[in-house]
Amino acid sequence: MRIGVLTSGGDCPGLNAVIRSVVHRAVVDHNDEVIGFHDGWKGLLECDYRKLDLDAVSGILARGGTILGSSRVQPAHLRGGVEQAKGHVADLGLDAIIPIGGEGTLKAARLLSDAGLPIVGVPKTIDNDISSTDVTFGFDTAVTVATEALDRLKTTAESHQRVLIVEVMGRHTGWIALHSGMAAGAHAIVVPERPFDIAELAAVVGKRFEAGKKFAIVVVSEGAKPREGTMEFSSGATDVYGHERFSGVANQLSVELEERLGKEARPVILGHVQRGGTPTAYDRVLATRFGWHAVEAVHHGRFGMMTALRGTDITLVPLADAVQHLKTVPADRYTEAECVL
Ligand code: F6P
Image 1 (tube, helix red, strand yellow):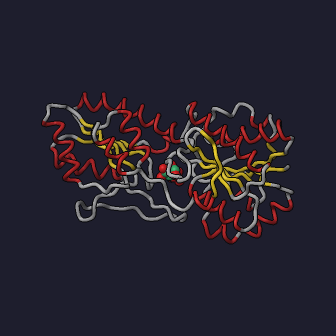
Image 2 (image 1 turned 135 degrees about the vertical axis):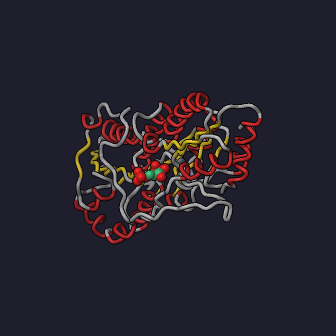
Image 3 (image 1 turned 45 degrees about the vertical axis):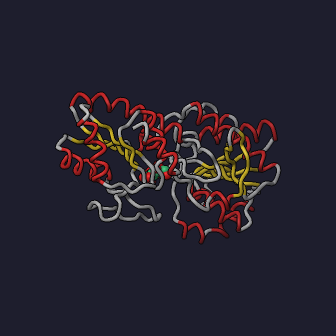
């Protein structure tokens, strides 16, 4: 068989582990040929690729980023390129394409799959917001990085008796904030699923100071917003991919909390450090298992499917189900976290 692989959307620790696993399983066990498209869907649309053999993937398991490069493609551009993509797949004699990506990539995968291309998707995102899979690789690394940062920030916050508002990634969902906040023992966690009331948040943090504590750490997802009518809030514009450009919730919270509490407050934005660098052991294993199962799915003709983790098993789920809605933080997970704040 001849298999094409690509990585698309925001990068994520573990992408190289999937690529390596696909090549090993395909080349060593099935005698397949693998090619890698450069810079995501763009590579398929422009027929820009390279051959991936065992040498090409040697030493990449622990490397962050993606050796193939990644990019975002505007949905309209991709819709207009379906015939072109089909033509390239036919010209290259590809039997299957394995796109590795998040929500946008998987939606594109579904579009191309519905158009008749043989596709098996692999979900990735540090945000952990893809439904139909318990976890996506990259999430554990992001949580580990954020937790380490929070541990470090606690000591400086304490020395200066400050409130530190730490902004983590999470466009629509608060998984990174929830997990890193719980792991580091943050004093408040603010997620997009629960619009915040600034008065309530100030009261929670204020109570801590009244109890004699000298500092506080608030973890906030970048996509968090105030409950309507409770605080003036500037939202960002939208980029060409339809994604909201955030305007700094931590900055805005820090100004408000400093004013309301009379305590020094500082915003800390962790940003892309959560996405860069080497994946954790957990993410390397999950990514490797996804790659292995994606190749098996190709050999069983299970097109239009995506690999998923269910409990400890890797299964296949329809791409159509995976892109229907985002996996948000359920209310009971937030309640559990609240009781240990
Ligand atoms: O989707 C993953 C993610 O890291 C989000 O958490 C974040 O909002 C977004 O990508 C950032 O994208 P970019 O790197 O394009 O700014």
